[in-house]
Length: 156
Image (cartoon, rainbow, N blue to C red; front, top):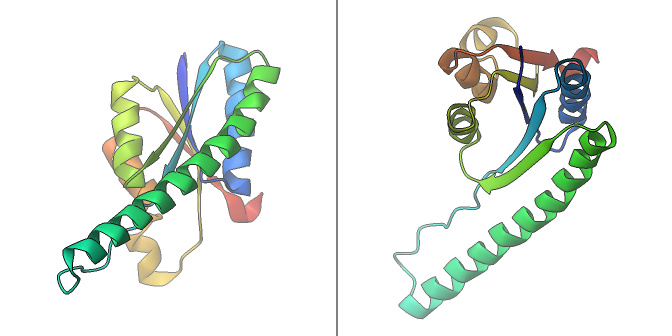
């Protein structure tokens, strides 16, 4: 029923809970779990007023920061993947830098994911609740055809 389960994991307790749910489902269906961690890119401030050498130094430092953050995130996600391996579940991990919603949607399409299990971040009230299910969660739910399980981390 579910061959490929995607767990977008932000390194939070909610992501850990989503992974626990995915492991239980994967054990029942002999599914593969994909753990995806997306890092928001550190962008460059406007550099038009800098000399070319200063601009190059700044851009190199930003690249180094992005690379360092990615390296630490890979270590963290590899530790999460061990939980799957301890349960004899085939696991793939990916850590990348970019827009979370777009990269999750790309992975769903490219890997032919048939179930997404993820945490939603916060509860909103009033009009904000109507307009936002959490921007990443909302974009995923609105743009995929596979089932999506959203875990309310405030009630875990």
